[in-house]
Image (cartoon, rainbow, N blue to C red):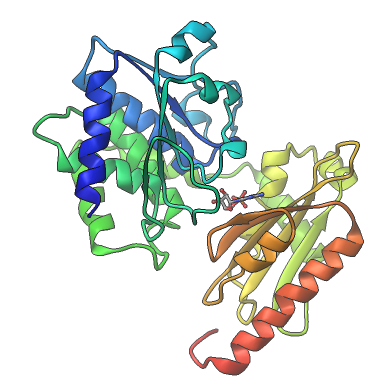
Length: 328
Ligand code: AMP
């Protein structure tokens, strides 16, 4: 079924001299990998086309993937085909000038809440958008070219968004397309070192999380990181947000939540929710958020909302445990 849409996307790409790629703000490995990877494929295949990736945000954790490019005139956008990757809704697109593009294509694996784009290829069961880009390349490999650098970007996004190929979203196809990327000669030792190694200070902060963290009666682990605490540990928002992974392997805790104060005037708090076995995205949706069944995000504005959110998650976990046997 997806063959038709992939062919339509390839056709559109062929029609345009200027192609601009877009992703969500606060990029993760999949957002960076899919945009940079597709950019590499398009540039290698059509050196005469202008293929642009313009964003001014930066991720320390993913600095090794390189920053994007500097702004260009509005006229360039107006003649371009825009391709938005890994972004469920237009309000999450980092570069707001996407709206100027002549036509827009959406390629995504998030649950569709507000469809957009003249063409849309959305498959929610895909482990990553990078997997979709790898599939796109593999489908048209007779026509498309790829570089080792582009394959490394795509593989990195596949690795990060699938929890190192451990999530249940990983299918036989995921590994087959990962193999197509690996065949390009990726330095996996270096890639995993970039992804895994931590400054010692970050590990000391992790120890603090274990002290602060609370666990509800039915197994929801959560931690609240005030701006004051983040400043005390000299943490940038991205490093503070990494608190979520410290809570991911506690037996009996099927859900874990990080509340990270943004330090703005409105008192907004970023909420990161994760779970295993049980879907938790309904909770995120009740607090101005969304995402995947077991990895989603929301925003709250006070401790009262935090307590209500934790209570709701706890009730879901309780119900799940009472009605299912195979969990731990
Ligand atoms: P994060 O905790 O920021 O890594 O987000 C986990 C997943 O949920 C990602 O796929 C995000 O795109 C999605 N997500 C996070 N926050 C929101 C939000 N406010 N609305 C919709 N989706 C979100």
